[in-house]
Length: 319
Image 1 (cartoon, rainbow, N blue to C red):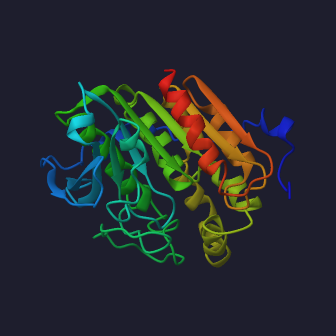
Image 2: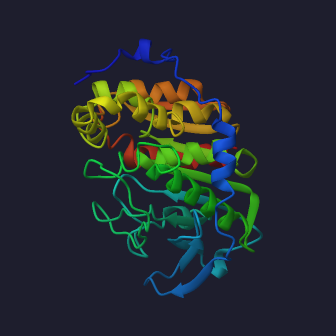
Image 3: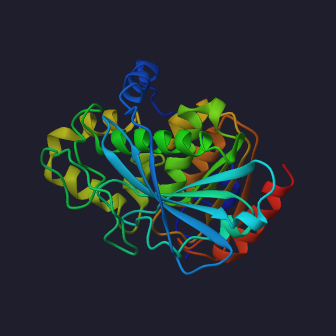
């Protein structure tokens, strides 16, 4: 079902989104609160012989612990500094088990698979809590702390993600000039936001069917959660509409992405009921760096899946 804008209209869709006057100052203050403790890495046996895996604990926003897996090609397969991929997770997913995400290490990359704080009890598991509470919110994560940018949940998430990027760039076996950020859905939104918040640290972006884009339109046209969490919150808190969207403007990928400079490969699915394609194009069309987008005409939120992984491998190899 093509329920959203026709493709020819979506390709030029650029809504006039409000940009907070203090956007730069807000994120400078936020990133200054990333913890300074060095990461802790513990070798684990995943049962795989071509991939070397480590359990990672790193310091995120306010020094809160964030867990990740680091996967490296086995020592006999390594030669010289490695390119890297930092992978962020879809909504309510976590880093999973040690053997779950090994494609990028198998392709010769150092691969950091990062938890999203408080999530990881949905389609795969996580090991990172969120020690910060919030005011009234819809079940889920999208409206936690939404009354103020300083308390909003994704402030901590985006800061954690920047911290993870710097951990991989600082690894002795990694070439810091060749580290890519990647993710689908929520992970796509996080990866693009990291590219905007740390533009000199990101070599490229792999952004698939991203969440966290053009919130007002998403709330109007999305067919399923998580955006419907926002709809239900606003239906209950009728006097908080302007305040909620003001907060969200600090985290909107269609706003932040303008600050990114790294080359990016995006994907969008025209039958995506979760992340409406028009919202993806709103962010893609405003993205500040060189960019390409693959359109999957007959797919829902799974997007290009394994077909798109092949496209990503080819695209990165050609950079």
